[in-house]
Length: 113
Image (cartoon, rainbow, N blue to C red; front, top):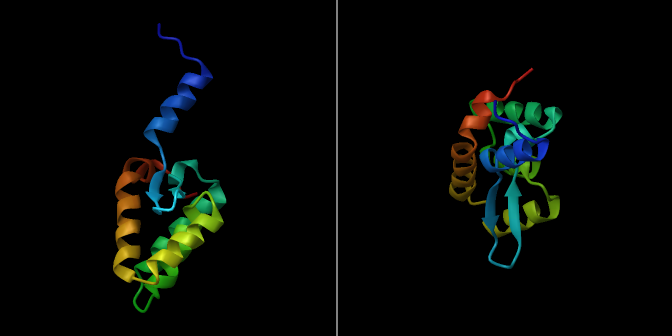
């Protein structure tokens, strides 16, 4: 029978559900936390933002910026990233798409309720 320590399990979870990291080129790195690693209230808010993005007339820039702030592990670094992006919707959408692709397995497993 295989035996594991809790530290082994944590290390495996860290590897499997790692953050999406964006280097700002200034020495700062923004870590976008995998949804499974977020508190339940933040996961629920992320699902709400995703649902709102799909609605007609949604302000995609505001919603994508809110989502990036929500999943970032550091609000100041998230704001620095958003300042660098300068409201470029294509870049915001690409970041969110990259984040979604890197967390696809975890997100599919995350409970909404």
